[in-house]
Image (cartoon, rainbow, N blue to C red; front, side):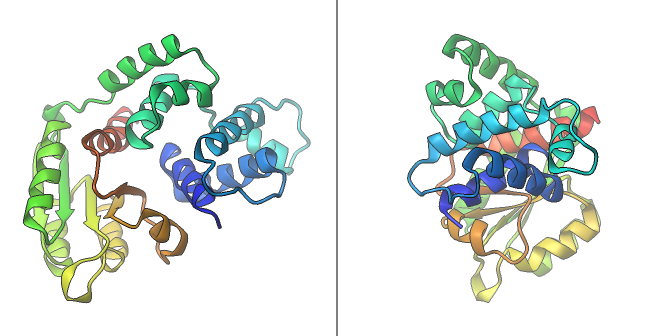
Amino acid sequence: MSNEQAELRHHARVMLWDRDVGDELFRLAADRAFQGTSIPDNQRMDAFKRFYEAWREGVSTVGAPLFTDAALFSALPGPDNVPRQVLMLVDFAGFPLDQAAEIMGIDRSVAEKALSIGRTQNRLDPAMGCKALIIEDEFLIAEELSALAKQAGIAEVYLARTVEQAILLAQEHLPDIIFADFRLKDGETGVDAIEPLRELSGAPVGFVTAYPHSVLKHSVIPPDFLIQKPFRPEAVTAIIGHWLVEKEMD
């Protein structure tokens, strides 16, 4: 699996808030976009553009025979919320606005307005009382993530240095979103925390890592989202709003 392929699969999971449904979107859109050929490395923007074109076409299919991939594709959500798509392409995925507009097939001016709307819609109201748990053994990184979470509208942030501390905090506070360093000290990893924390809180669990492609391709238990170190502040605030604003709307 190429780096681009792993990232597209992750992007599909994040955009649909579900690993299984996201994997179906990735499979169907990638088959249509790349027709069974491998997605080459170092062609990230082109891979995303072709993926989005296939996504738009696939969900627009009308009259597909039942129980076919075409029928399944047409039943999936489309990339219709342009402000959210542009926001996540720019702030989370890190594309320049011009490239995000090209990926979406829209004019730059439309993308610029959509990005502004998306950022406004993505802000949490602190009155929602959302809680975040951060598992990080480096103090400065934990403090920076905590500050960004509060900036995004998180009301309460809890910090843990170990998996054991994280599980105890999750039991007590039931966080709405969890950030876990992929490589902790004493041989622990974020993978050790994912399943028990999901069972306790039902919250999305994301990895913070300097090795994103390795994690996306080889992690036995995939995260709900991934933040690359050194992280961009806008990526952290974007993913918080993406998960929790939509949750509140539901």
